[in-house]
Amino acid sequence: MHLDQLVERAEALVKNSQRRILGITGAPAAGKSTLAAAVASRLGPRARYVPMDGFHLANVELERLGRRDRKGAADTFDAAGFVALLRRLRDQGDDVVYAPSFQREIEEAIAGAIPIPREVPLIVTEGNYLLVDAGPWAEVRGLLDEVWYVDPLEHLRHARLIRRHMEYGKSPDAARAWALGTDQRNADLIAATRPLADLVILEDVQLDREAVAAAPPDVPALDTSDDLTP
View (cartoon, helix red, strand yellow):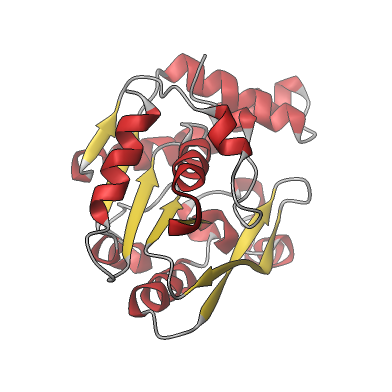
């Protein structure tokens, strides 16, 4: 599927002044963030990219809870906080809403990093658990107008995931163990939500890198470690 087709579908969601929220989900390293950033970039000032990863619990809190060794699992996020943000974005009651981002270099969320002005008609959010129907996550689906599920070939996804872990400091053995252990358990949970998506993207999306490079300054840069092309 070409990026142009997906951008057209995203644009079709915005029919009047009422804000719409598009969700993009899938397993770790499926290419969610790359696709979300690309769609938002192509739409320019009409869209903002708001990643769910900004709601990772801080490492110190994960240590306190005894969950640091499985960071990325559904219970290592502030799911209720993510729901609250989606509600604020739908309400459009504030001149500007500030969303958090996630910095992989330090493995921590950064509060107030993404400004979303009231007049922006489309929010593009992405994350692993947008379709999970349990706990606070169960409220997410009702706040999204459409959800796309990115489902690349497993061997490509695993290769990207292992490479990503190595790029951020893990040894090859540790990267493989995390990808096939903690990450795969999360992927199995996410895979069960696939039938709930409005669109399943099976083939690789051909990304328009020039459009991504021309993104507005408040759209996060493309993370090529998540590229959907082989």
